[in-house]
Length: 193
Image (cartoon, rainbow, N blue to C red):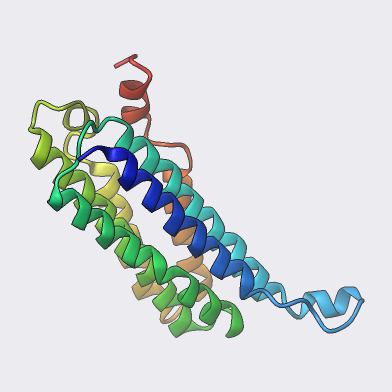
């Protein structure tokens, strides 16, 4: 099967995820700065999640760019990723509505960690299909970046239960790590590697 259908479907699901998140934003009741300040947690949680979803979309595009064809295992690994991404709006809303309270921030971390695990699984599934000599396998190697990211999320989840602000900072570290698409893959996509 060609990868184009997988990419188109994934793009559509990610677009719906972002749409659901933005629909959860409610305008403040009032026209003063103080009224806007009342909704800052919801707005901030939306911005954070939008960035995370955009990072996944961008890196997903790069990951699949090196792929020629897909098999059933890749389709299911991709659906696994999309499932976990689809839960981000729920966790985003809960965290924002509860002003970054400990448990919602921990659940939000889990909602970020599980797509990270699924993205790692998708990469490994592609490598298993294409073989250890594939361009993707050469580009990411042992994928230390993904493993470290998952570890940071897990530390953040545990930290959230006593210091939600520190947990959010740890989640942000992962976003910074992945903000620029994986250079190892980008070099292969551009033909530099």
